[in-house]
Image 1 (cartoon, one colour):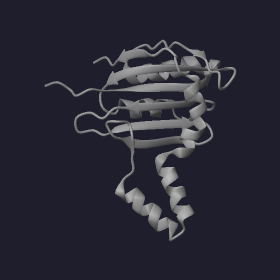
Image 2 (cartoon, rainbow, N blue to C red):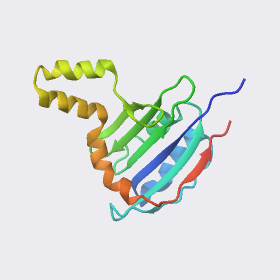
Image 3 (spheres, rainbow, N blue to C red):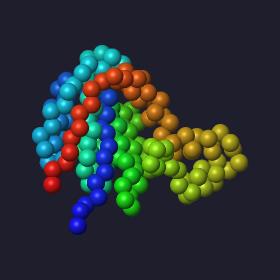
Image 4 (cartoon, one colour):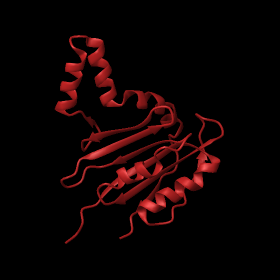
Length: 167
């Protein structure tokens, strides 16, 4: 019986030079393969470097990558995982200031906000539209998008590597 695989992308938006080999080691520990990323200067943050890695692996690999990189100071990254048979997709975003954000995504990469989360926004808003807006903004990860957007644009045209999980 074959195992359903999924794929995704790891975007390291900014990392200091000293952290780059540790990021590669952390990725390698998840995918069971040595990883040599092509690091390029990050124009949005002088002195920082960026890299991208497309990956193929078992469902849950995106969460494992995000967990392996979580909590390092001065590291900004995003991990995406496409939906696979019986498994929703996901997006993890991390910034030093905001920490980690996770959202479930559909086949087009759109964030899916659950009924319970929407109900919570209504209930916590208690009739105050600005409070409802704030809760929905949190559910969509807008603060992470705002912080990461300059780093995303600085990456346009950057090289991407494909990595297939072993085993």
